[in-house]
Length: 201
Image: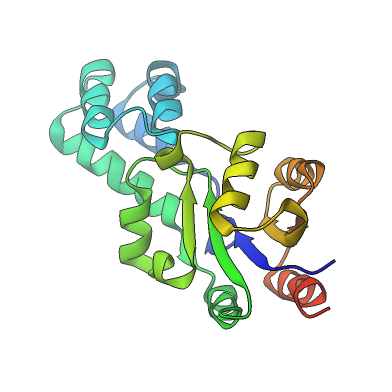
């Protein structure tokens, strides 16, 4: 089987990220009961992931529902984005750059409204690949089969011609069930070696 396109997840793959702990930190700092942010904003976080709210609406919900000041909202969101962006996986980013033009390359990310602009400013990810598919821009999240179909369409290949890299086992399993080839990211060296097996065969 010949791979014609290689598609990367971002968080935990192209970006080195840890657990999102900004909510618990700020709940403690502001004297709020544990779980306040989730209790009051779960629908906002979910809506932000599929682009049905704007960043301004996210900020307004934090003010109106949690009772934060504008300054507190800005500080909480700055902390959120710091965790969200993590640090660049420089070795994998540089390797991904070498795949073009022999292969079409892409990004497929379960994202949050505002992510494209910040990831581009920080790491230049949209320049790295041929196309970026962000959940908040297309209104679909992994593992929705409609999103697998969309990324294949955007890459211009059949599922069996696409290799997808993600760090979440259930998403890798879902991609494979759809008919795509997939690698579970466990380390940068392991992932590059796996891509080489598929891409250079």
